[in-house]
Amino acid sequence: MENTNSYEIIGNERVLHDIQSIVELVDSLIISGYHRNASDIHIDPSPEGVVVRFRVDGVLSYADTISTDMHEELIARIKILSGLRTDIHFVPQDGRFNFSQGVCNCDIRISIIPTHHGENAVLRLLIGNSDEPILSGLGFSESDENRILRSLEHHQGMILVTGPTGSGKTSTLYTLIKLLSTGKTSIITLEDPIEYALPGIRQIQIREKHGITFANGLRSIIRQDPDIIMVGEIRDTETAQIAINISLTGHLLLSTLHTNSALGAIPRLIDMGIDPYLVASTISLVIAQRLVRKVCGQCRGVGCGACGNLGYKSRTVIGETLTIDDELRKYIMSRVSFSELSRYARVSGMLTMYEDGMEKAGKGITTREEVLRVLHE
Image (cartoon, rainbow, N blue to C red):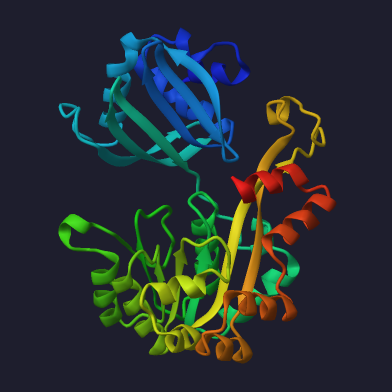
């Protein structure tokens, strides 16, 4: 039977600080976040009370302040749900659990750290998507989508997705993996953490304390006869070198890299000690992306109840795709300047994220101010 009291908060009939039951409070936090399309719920202790904030469409907003008296019980309840130690308070802990109540069904990843005012908790809501994988559904333009799909047909080399934390890289990688998952190929992923379970795909969780790092994991899974490998992130030189070597042996490898642009991936790998010849020989495509808020479809940006009077609801990708063709390979191996690489990329038809964003703003999908905020924050 559903806990109908937990749903009352959605209609603003009650506020969080009025709830006295810890079980009901945690349920209400999650349900409220779910219905507000929050990606994260922040529970921050302070001298004035426990501040609750929701991250919706990439922006944190205040929800309520709960009495300090309920803080320890609140954290204990979250620890119990996620299988964490309730008797440890001065060491960071991570866990996860599944929450299912009514229409709200999601996996929740937990991070708890000790702070000056007590333990701070962040709940990441992982809502599965069973829809067919469509790149345009993420927000990619038709030209970018065509470039990506052409690269996937080769089934070898390396495809990189770049951008800062929170730019939607993992969602793009998962979409690419779903597109590649035909039942006729062996696909293995190395992830930290595993965000969603993908049917028919072998997913491996990075566990550094047990010796499963990105580098060691790559060495092991290559002996598992994979056709396609997804590595959550290339963080260091060792992982980069192994990934390059795997790409040279006829495998397709997908991964992410922290760079500000698609072209930025090239000097980044060279700075990590990878020979320009190897960079040019293995990379077939680089995708760079950010997430911008979409103009609310109901109020067209004026502000209404559906968007919390923000004028924005949901997010979409602004991106750029760089195809590494034979001519660009020559440029890379010749160690030409970044400006020369950029000039050729533009001549060959690459639109920048800024241009993609302005095009979407012109169509009323987002706004110029939102594009500038995301690209310059």
